Image (cartoon, rainbow, N blue to C red):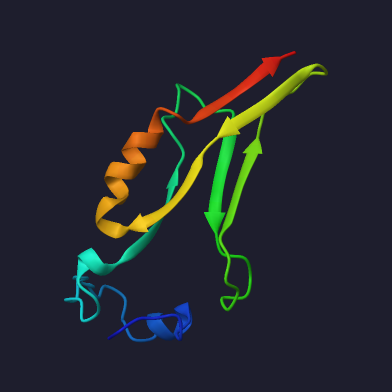
Length: 116
């Protein structure tokens, strides 16, 4: 059974009985070689003991939209004369270089509240 976006949960569930086991495995790629692929990567940084913001990423509604939803919700108080700021990165490039590029940016991410 090949599963893709054309099937909803009820269709997929109808193919199995209670107690059935499901085994997932990686199907060999038939497309481009790994080194020819491009990637989009989010670099959020290292979380301190607690974070004062919530990161959310995903799709918005219609799957035909060509867009990436990425929201940061700050969940603390910002008093008058204070400013909340953060620096995160969204990088693109060769898939095989993404981990190295992302690691190089992690220490440059910032999240803080600063008083003027």
